[in-house]
Amino acid sequence: MSADAGIIHAGTFRHCSAGDFNNDGWWDIAVGDFGNSGTSNVLYRNNQDGTFTNVAASAGVDSPLRNFGMVLEDFDNDGWMDIFLPKYHYLPEDVNTSELYRNNGDGTFTNVTPGSGMTTQTDMGHNTGDIDGDGYPDIFIGTGHPSFKSNDLLLLITPNGAGGFIANNVSQSSGINANGPTRCHGIALGDYDLDGAIDIYTNNGGPPGQKIYIEENYLWNNQGNGNNWTSLRLEGVVSNRSAIGARAIATTTAGREVHRVLRAGNGFGNTSSPIMHFAIGSDKGIENIEITWPSGIVQLITQPPMSQIIDVTEHLLGDLDGDGHISTTDLLLLFGSWGPCRNCASCDADLNGDCNVNTVDLLILFGNWG
Ligand SMILES: [Ca+2]
Ligand SMILES: [Ca+2]
Ligand SMILES: [Ca+2]
Ligand SMILES: [Ca+2]
Image (tube, rainbow, N blue to C red; front, top):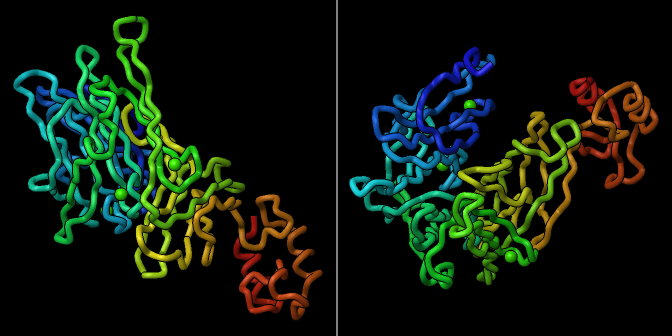
């Protein structure tokens, strides 16, 4: 199947990341290449017909040399997936700064690494998440070469206002280096104590079966900073139950957007909490969150309560009996409620919210039939 799909490239691949980099609704695959002899990264654009085309060169992200992965993440909340390339310092002659690329929205990326503050180290485990709660995803890098230890990195990423990014290295001040160097192979991010601040779990050590490489893992409790937040726990009905692939845009009361995509993992050796976390810095509240489920169903949550986790079940407009399909049962329920609503707030068959069940609602129901 891989060959038929165009997944045919040879390389020394370490990790991949999936996401829709060109916003055509079809997920693409970014693959980091670790080699240093003629091969380079692969960015598989989904051709929407079961095949993929490698567009890494034309997109400007084929950066050769020691990529331990290729991470798709929207670092500036503009709705376009940017790219983080974690680089690995393997041989003495390898001096490769980890890189950041901004998605230009036209199929190309711009390397915005120079002047950003990105550094050179032995990137192995890596993950992205909003550690400081300002709405912008940050980067945690584990530096896990099996034969030596080094300090992990926490880089707080923000847009620089000129199309690039600032990577603020807070590894020392944040405390994550307090236990000294590690061999960090995996990083999980999630708010385990439900205080609204994303915590960090690091998996340390070397290859399995070798006692000299056994190390303690660490759980770093994020002390938080009072930034405002709310979270969504999604459950798919028409889509997969875990809602993997769901996208959501939160618009704050100050008019700022925070974009999130729910994925099963996003880097070497990592997975993260499936709870979608929206931190909004000092903005006071969220006006609405628009969820686009993998099924294509769009659901709007208006003025969600803050500082809590909200359970959201995928809702197909017109699915009045909640079985995930629109059928004659729903049609009969709609006819049963025909006419002006007695109570506007609990009038389920009123699909367009005008407090009246009429032909407009009937047409919406037929539009979602099946
Ligand atoms: Ca795509
Ligand atoms: Ca972006
Ligand atoms: Ca952040
Ligand atoms: Ca926490």
